[in-house]
Image (tube, rainbow, N blue to C red; front, side, top):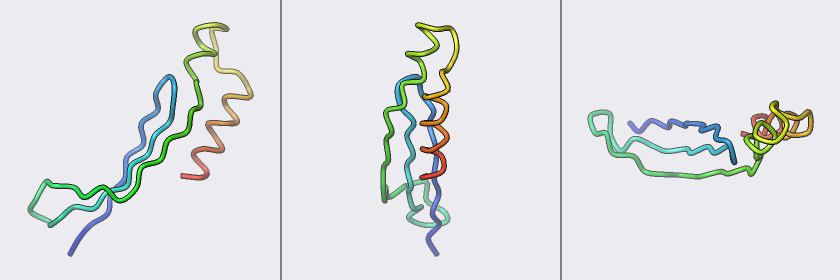
Length: 67
């Protein structure tokens, strides 16, 4: 029986999500099913303003809701 897993990476430039399937319960090999990337640019706000802007926060929230 295969098992699907996903992971989300929140970076300074983008939020990524990968969905994969374990090939078998005893194997660590993954078959990538889908990759998603949203260019949110959270780090730009922090580096220039010292905090995440409302706009970037809303964009990040929307991205999580889509994922």
